Image (cartoon, rainbow, N blue to C red):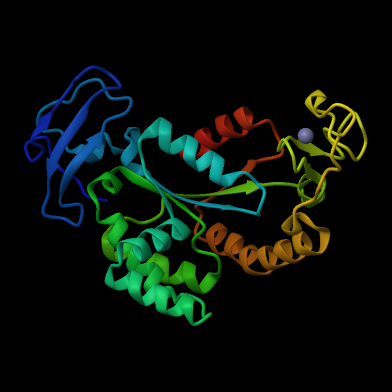
Length: 277
Ligand SMILES: [Zn+2]
């Protein structure tokens, strides 16, 4: 973790508590940029910034783990919107690089066009680029990467090289039975798009849509192909096989925190913030 002093920092733009933004310049990997100083009222001259770092957003370097359907994407977006630290999703980085036609994007596109997996060195290259942007100096939320222990090792090496090691890994924990019911129970009306769940929020008209707009011609609800039981079972198996060892990896490093994601979204978020900040 870098320790800038107030003298090195150029200016605090707005000193009101919760509004302060520090413009900094450093010789380290963070370079120059701006830091939101969440929760800090006032700086004292000459006090190393490291004194303040535990209270600032800048030690929020997070990795989010969770099964498909655990709601981790939603939670990451919420934290991003509230704390101003970027959500870095490997999928988004890939799509963006391909769309912009960067070197890494071209290599990724060639692999995808050939029906191959995009290699880890391409994804790590994209993550390196992304974390080099000023907004990531205040922290980041990695979502969707790493997916296995080999990737976690490569990521650890990259982040230690950048001087931005992971602070916390948050596991969005859900009971597998509940998850299967949530996903396989989902039904959608093909006409109006209303979403039901046969276990938790069934239609008043059984297997037909209960939206009164349809009158007597209520359409039959449909299940999406990727919500079918065998598809779900396979996605969960892949997740368990590859991600369970990650839980051990990060537990051994002492950075794993577990959030109970079998709760209403707001409760999950409150627990998430408690362990992440
Ligand atoms: Zn309908």
